[in-house]
Structure formats: C-alpha cells, structure tokens
Length: 272
Image: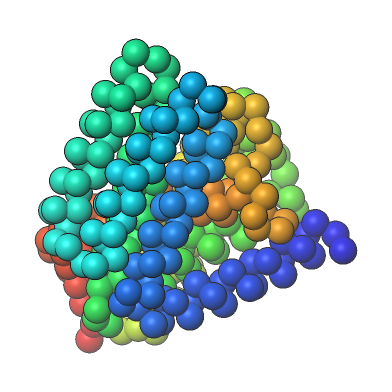
C-alpha cells in the first residue's frame, strides 16, 4: 500500500469519527477537543524535552489537565482562559532558569488555546454545529486542494526554508478550495451573512496554512520529520491538526469579539 493510499484511508476514518462526535456535540465534542489539546502538548514536549525538563513538563501537563477539565464540564469561558493564563505563567516561572520556559510554556499556551477554542466553538445550538462544519470545510478543503494543486502545478516554493514541499500555487489553490467548501456549508445551512462569511473563510484558509508552516518550523527547529507516529500516513496529532487549531483560534476570536466569549458561533452564523 502506497503512502498516499494509507493517508487517504486514515483521513476517511478520522473524518468519520470527528464528524460523528461533532454531530453529537455536548461533552463528546468537548472531550475530543480536550484529547486534541492533550495530544498536541504531549508531542510538543516529546520533541522539545530533555531529561532535565521532565519535571517542568509533568507539572505543566497537570496544569493543562485542570484547564481541559474546566472545558469539559463547561465552566464559563472567562474562567477557562483565566486558568490557562495562570497555568502558562506557572510553567514559564518553573523554567525561568533554563531554556525550557519558551518551549514548555509556549507549548502549554499553544495546546491550551487550541483545545479551548475548538471546544467553545461547538455550542449547544445549530449555530455551533454550523460553525464547526464551516471550520472543518475551510481547513480540510484547503489542505486537500493545496496538496493536489501544488503537485499538479508546482512553481515557486512558498517557504522553502521552513517547508520545501509547499508551493505558492498550492497555497492559492488551497485558499480557493477552502473558501468554496466553507461557503457551501454556509449556504446550505441557511446562514444569513454570506459575504462576511466568505471573508472569514478566506482568513481561516490563510491562517490554517500559517499554522501548518508554524508546526513545520517547530519540527525543523527540533530536527524531526513528524511530530509523532500515532496516525498512519500522517504522523502525529500535531501533523494532522496544525492548520485546524490555528483556524479554530481565529474563528473563536472573531466570534467572541462579535458576540461574546461563551457564544461565539451565534454571532457569526445567524440562520434564516
């Protein structure tokens, strides 16, 4: 079986599981978001850690667990972000005498913001469901279209020093595909503000590609090809969700600024 075939099969299975949990919503989806955050932080620590840093990483993992429990049991958003801020500060203080502070504390912030933003977007409403499907469509279509357009068209590299395989044509094709897929979700869900959502979809596509490049930079910084090996054909959790978590944070921030930290989706996805 080729790597592409294995990648496609893994993707189909992952999409089926994630969509099922998204449709279920509630605690099931929040547990998924928490699991993603936990996986991201574990792989971040595995890439950047040394024996001397393990104590700081274990304490940071416990702090992250507190934040994620607060997410799962639906503590108000302000309290969750307050807990996360405290956790990051403690992690940074624990590593202030070494070089671990910027990596362990940074990884805690990255994983925590990723999981919390994703979990809070899926409100117990139709708007919450549409928000997540809109996000998935933008990010997944961007990823798929960027891959195939980049391979078919080629051309100048997007960021050769960070990720030599990515091309500008792939980035453009990914953006077009991401916007089209997201707008199909918005249109068929009956969303009212399609023009604004088109702009948001483009932003999510760009941010997801930036998130992909950021993870590539982190891996290159630590001399690893994949963040892990848990997903056949894809590598680790970070390899699969790098663009998704960056876009989730962006969409959450837009929604929170528009309608409140606890109801970000309702402000963005008014249904006819």
